[in-house]
Image (cartoon, rainbow, N blue to C red; front, side):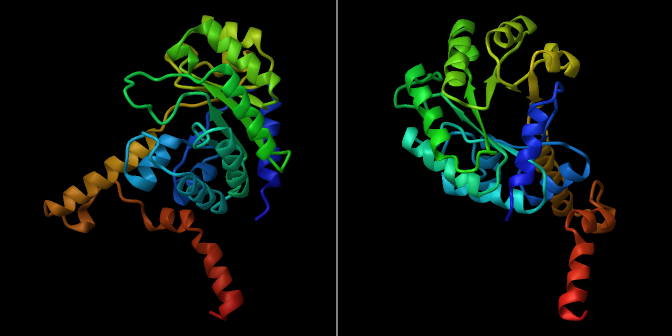
Length: 286
């Protein structure tokens, strides 16, 4: 498939002075819904991938091939530019290079590589950061793995939650110097923190784990934030809906009396029934 257009559109969003909330997606149907509703960007997180593919918590037990495969399924279902959280790149810097190659092939528009020491090392109870030097090596390896120059690479850090603001800024500046296209900060909680980060760096910013203080899109846009995550409630909502529906059926509720079930029109829309009907007529004489 041809992925260039969605990558060009994603970079165009980074070049604006606006901030966008992405739609959190986890499969083909959720991606189509987000696109139909007008979201400019889809977000596929490592945590959601682990839930969707393995039914497991976010403990880095998902493999690169499983993550890339699900990203491809999401991408082939529509044309929404997809931002993905590639965690630590599934290993050291050489693994990061391979990760970029696989996710580029899977059609993502932007991927983030983080500098947290993952998976959790033996005997540790708190998150730890890689050295800045190793983080820089990963960012350089990510760039080396990229073949399509339109693919966006974001250097990600959770340092604000693990060390301090000064270290966060130092990491952002180091990843800028390594040549990434955007900076992804997780855990920024206050305007004072964001103001300092924005003043010290120059690249477009992606924020994860925001707070009510950081909900104003106009303010975020003025601080060079171009993407602000809102969490991954759609997946949790789908779990609740499936749970409630199955429980109702198990408890004896007749199928016709279930609530919260998508009607036939919505199901036809998200499955692109009209397209398949046309292809059936064109190719099978139906």
